[in-house]
Image 1 (cartoon, rainbow, N blue to C red):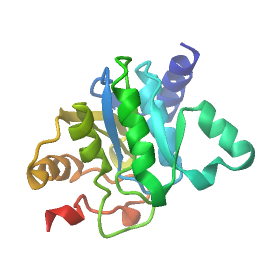
Image 2: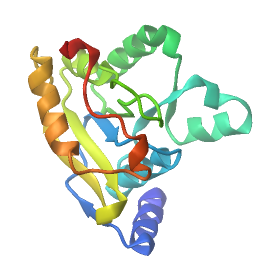
Image 3: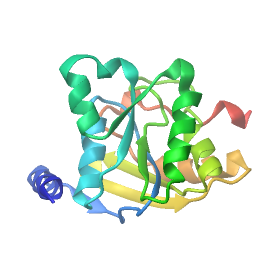
Image 4: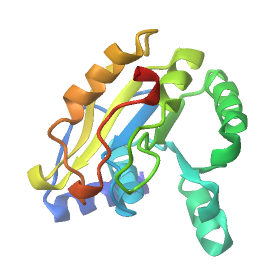
Length: 186
C-alpha cells in the first residue's frame, strides 16, 4: 500500500498518464531500455497498480549496499554467462501457483544493440504464462501496459506484435534503443 501511494504520487508529480491494466501474473517486457532510470520507471508502473514484481538485473549490480537495495526492490541477479540456471529457478517459482510477475529488459543493455534477448519468449513457452508489454514513453508522458499474449511457436509472428506495439515508444534516450528483433528470426 505504501509503495502504491508513493508511485501514484510520483507519477502525478511527473505529470504522466498511466495506461493499461496491471497483469495478475506473467512476464513483463520493459522497453525501450535506454537508461539506468528504466528500472525505477518499471517499478513505478507496477507499484502504481499495486503489484510487486520480480525484476531481472545483471548480477554485477548486486555488490555492496546497492545489492541489498535491489534485492529489497524485487531484483533477481542474472548471470548472463549462466542464464539457464536462473531461468530454471524462475520456471519453478512460476509453477508454484502463487501470482508471479517478472519484469525483464529484453534489449539486455541500455546501449543500442543488434538484437533483443529471446528469454521472455522461452519463459512464456516453458511456463505457459502470458507476456505483457510494458513501457515508459517520455515524449507522450505515458507509461503502463500494452498488449498481453502467449508465446507461440512462431517467433516472427510473436515479434511482429512486439514491433507493432513499440514502434512509437521512444524511452528516455531514444538513440540507445535497440529495434525489437531476435537472432532466431533469421
